[in-house]
Image (tube, rainbow, N blue to C red; front, side, top):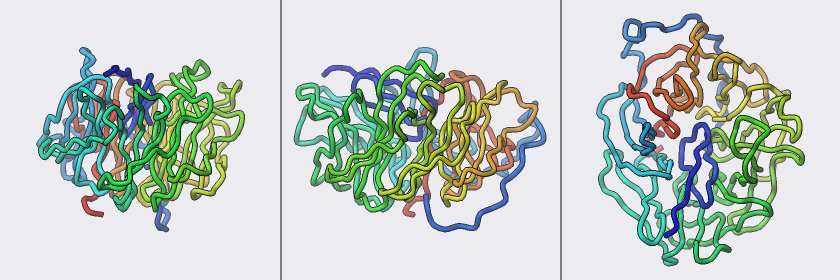
Length: 393
């Protein structure tokens, strides 16, 4: 089997896999009471051991990947106190770990002699199930499902038949596996983002190749298509490019958020775009903002977490879906970057990377921007991490 190099961009709470070298995606939405946005944190934490309180740490389970200096990807689950850690597996060129929609399983990828296979396992690494399609040469990776768990989609490709590269979908029991679409014109690789509420549509990012306009390595477009292969639409406006650096689809599959920049004017920064429903058009809800990237929905849909480049460090930020009240919430006076926010299941906290871009640890932060707890202690590149959804939700 031909080995495929995989490039991970910023932060993803899922899998960054595909042929050639695709980028990674660096999440819901009942009506909810919109809280007052918190202000910036007021203090730095020079001595975490002396100031952090374990009683403030929300319960939960985290799945994550750490890349060390030997470039080996090591995958784990660990509770929010950094205890009860389970080493799951080690590999290279995968960057693949996420939770199933119901929070009961880990979804990842196994490399076999004939192809890459969608794989499920228990949070402690047990009960491993490797799914093999009838087309033995078909690689299926990056599994993503509907919120109700009834449908599942993949990025797929076949080294023996290039026309099979694209989006594939099936029922959760792997019946009715079919190719939804090939790659759009000029697209080199596909990164799935997720399915709409009913599974009727699939959102994905199409990688157009190396990017030199911004600090992000690859650029492309974001698309939606019906699960029967009809109605392919580009969502980012003409003349813009995107890089998916957050799980931009809401947890219920009803809304999509992403940042994009104007081709030839990247120095003006990114803007946040929101798409309401599978028939919606992308609405620009912010001005072009230097240093703004990423979009991850709060579980209730009332806020979106982003990352901003403050000039001295990357900082986690919050914004409302209508584009108002954008503000950085990382602690003032803290020179270490804290970026790539991923929400807790109840929307009260999120997980961030703290430190240098390729040498950092995972921390829990509250919505006031205070660091609550350090989850991991071995510095590395924590490119992929996800907070477990409430099991059986």
